[in-house]
Image (cartoon, rainbow, N blue to C red; front, side, top):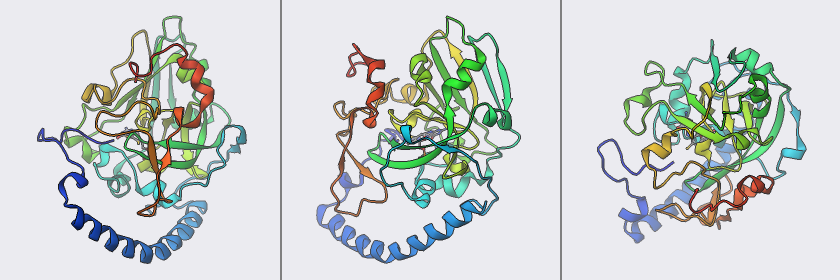
Length: 331
Ligand code: MTE
């Protein structure tokens, strides 16, 4: 997510807007040389850490738990997966800082146990579930989904979870439930990023009921065969693969069913830039940049051509949810 205003109220320009061309081209050549050298090192990192992860040690050295999950090829892309290193060290989780590497560095302070999620609002059977009961509510599946960020990068990640619809059915929404709101943890003692005024905390996201009920919407408790690392939204997040990544709230503590459309964090902070729907849509540009292409993290190389972004991130099966809607207006 790119922020329009920093806490001082100043716009944050792109590097290309402030650096003369000859300087940044020289800099790119320099970085490319360093990157070539680093590639050998990062391959070693990847091997060591995939192995450690498989043995139950997290990328931060803390123990992690394996999660048995059945592969769901019907809901998975066969595209090459992003490395564990990139997926866990290039993150947006503003509660732990604004730079991509901040969450990996800072999220060790997040305490993910005990953890309870309250499911309430327009439901017949409100529930408070601890993380173990939530994890066991339905059989876990591994689904390899693309994640496309509004900033123009994408990844392919093997997530572990189950369709959110399982949880929704368990609480029996009333006829008044039109939207689902997700509220995530906001605890200053654990989350240094809350001191910044970038967003009105807590981070809140929302979906329309039919979107939330779509089988692709994944209640996610793991990735790469393990429980979620803290920086990726432990212990529970949602992944909605046809929407920009910011519609995938991390570290959820409350799920509420509402009559009215919820006020979502990015929409409140910059309504002209981030709409409620936020479907991946190459035809609707962000006001400050194009959404037509994307950079796949890990395969970029400095001069590699970007990929074309696909409508609904390639998940055409959700198109019927938006039949008859003007997606320029409801962006
Ligand atoms: N959830 C919370 N609570 N806080 C955040 O800052 N960032 C969002 C989303 N969920 C965010 C969040 C954004 S902008 C993206 S792109 C994805 O998380 C990134 O998920 P990843 O780090 O696992 O790739």
